[in-house]
Structure formats: structure tokens, C-alpha cells
Length: 482
Image 1 (tube, rainbow, N blue to C red):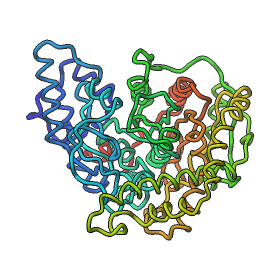
Image 2: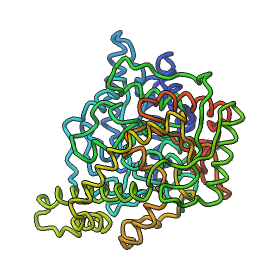
Image 3: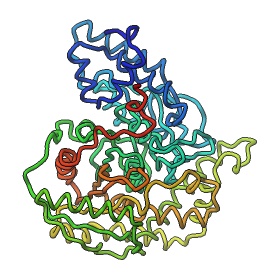
């Protein structure tokens, strides 16, 4: 079947398939790489005018790359694993031929000449990027509402946030525009939007992917990358495909091993989640218990206030670094016209911090391996909320909200996710629940270093026990088929 015979309804139907099933059609000879890419482009053109999940469309480039894959296959070459499967790179990820704006007005539209090893791995597997996904400026906010545009809307409710900072990626996958979209997570930025949009989001542990970006003292400690998807097998494939050990085996099924699961209800600062989130947590804990896992409600073995203060200090330093890098590029522009109020406010906070605050932050990081290692001798996995409320209305975390108010609200909302970034440990958000208003609520499972496979095996089991494949948001390929 060639792309000239592909109807809009064909394109929407293909959007209901995960990456594995789309790739299987190419391997069976039923479709070409060009067909998969053309179908994704049609879905984006039909649906993304409402969602605004893309910050940059690279349709012509994607068509050329897909045509090259089909041409090589026609010459007898073996198809790569994901030949022609469309994906989105986040706006902060360098991809050849596309600009890297990081959601900021301060960045240029000049295309990048190359990416880092992470992008090279995905391209080598046959994935074709059809564009860049939207994000908040420099990934510093938990909602995708950059002043540079676009404001991304949650496909479950256009009035609500898709989360951030990988909000465009999660919204696009949830709606079925593409089966895969890359996300980066420095304080929850994969797990938060995965929870808000009802998809699967894995934050790998430290040093479990090849190099994604240039070196940075804080980002190298905090940030991890993976592919958002609707199915566990797609996420598991993305993790294995980008592992530093090329032969790392992909987890393909659940494990018979029964786990000791610690359930933690309160956030790191001791706050309680709202009723919908708590009810979702209890339901997930009960599901795990019904599957034979040992479940126990406990608390974190660390000083959550000191920990979150350290995280907020490091987050502020990230903003200050971004502002410092922007100043030499301003020319005649004012800094306030190039960088958002939230970023400037965080940067100013960092400049007011004494050097001892940075010392204290790194001390917190240094303590975590021992604190968590002792904890994980008693428990295999931790279950907690991802956020303390369901997805908030758009505007709640807009970059123009007064800085002190925004900091207080946002850091309270993400009171569960930064721990794994500071500790370098893995965690995954699974779409197991919904609030009373129908918005998704993710369940977060976390484990000790090197236990990504444990989390993925558990995710397979929960996906089978409480399937979500047929749950689609109001604004998606499934709801537009008629």
C-alpha cells in the first residue's frame, strides 16, 4: 500500500497502533516507511491545530528520510527494527535538520547539524522524526505554556494542562499523533505529563542511556531521557535501544517474582494528596495486593524539607545558567523580551543564594544512595502518587504568574517526583486511574538503582491486569474515526 492510496481514515486507524504494531506492518510488506510517516503527518494536520503539541513540523525532512528507508529496503537491505515509525523529538533535543529552541524566545531557528548519541541510536533503528514537541521555556515549568508558543492542551480536556516539561510529547502520544515521543526528566518532566495525559512514562536511572546532550554539571546529575508511549513494550524497547550496553536485553513480559511494595502517600514536604489522588493510590495498592505482592504503607526515610530545599536551589541554578547563556546573544534586545518572568525570577533567586546552599544541595545528593540503599533492602518498589492533584487548569503554572506564588504552587504539586532525579534512581508513571472529572491520574513506581527492568516487568503485569489500551481521550484518533 503506497501513501497515495492512504486515506484519512487509514491514517487515524494506524494512529491507534503502538510502535511495535506499526513496525510489524512494514516488516510484513503491507506498508512502507513512507506510509507510516505520511499517516502521522495527516493525523497531525487533522488534530494538532487544537492540541498544539508540536513546536516545529519537519514533514518534508521526514518524507525524505522515510523514502530513503524504503529505497534501501527495495535494494534488498534488511529492515531495521522500527523502520519508518514516526516519533517526536522534544524541543530541547538536538536533531539534525531541526532547530533547538527549548521553548524560549531567546533561541534561534537555525537547524542543528547533528544530534548526540541518543538521537543517533534512534535514527539507526529506523525511527523517523516528524517534528519537535512543545515544552515550557528551558524545561523549568510543570506546564507547557511558553510565551514563545504554542500553549499545549491536554487531549482529555482542552481547558487543562498536559503537564510539563515534556507536555507536547505526552499530549501527542496520548492523542495518537505518533506512537513515540522523546521526553527528558529533571524533576518529573516525563512522569508528570505522562500522568496528566494517561500514558506510560519511564524515568531511567543515572547512566542508563547513551549521551543525550552536552555536558552540564547539574543536568548530568538530574536529567534522564526516554520515549513516552501508550504501551509498556514500546517504552521497554526505547529503554533497551538507547542503553549504554547495545546488547542490553529488552524486558518483554511480566515476572513471576512477587515484590515487597512500600506505599507512600505523603509528599516529601509531608503534604497529603487530594481525595482523587489518594483514592487512586489506594486502588493501585489494592490491585498490587490482589496480584500477590506484599503491600505496606510507610514513609520516606529522609528529611523531605531539606531535600526539597536542595532541589529547589539546584533548579534555580539551572535557570541562572540559562539566563547567563542568553545574555551574550541578546544584541539590541532586552533580556525581559527574550527570557520569561519565571526563568528570570528563578535566576535571581539563585544569585541570592549563598555558596553554602549549593554545598548543602550536593550534600543531600551524596547522602541519598546510602539512605535509599538501606530502605531498598526492605522493599523492592515504592508506589506513590505522581502529583498531589489531577491535571490543573491551564494558567495555573503559567510563566507570568508571580514568581513566589508560582514557586510555592508548582513545587508543592511535584512534591513526589524530584527524589529520583536527585538520587539517580528509576521511576515509571502508569495510567491506572482517573479522577471524578475523567482526567487521568498516574501511579508512580520507583526502585533502587539498576532496577529499571523490575519496574518494566511490573508495568507489564499491571497493564495486563488493568488494561488501558482502549481508553482514549476526547481529542484523539479514536474519537475522530467516525
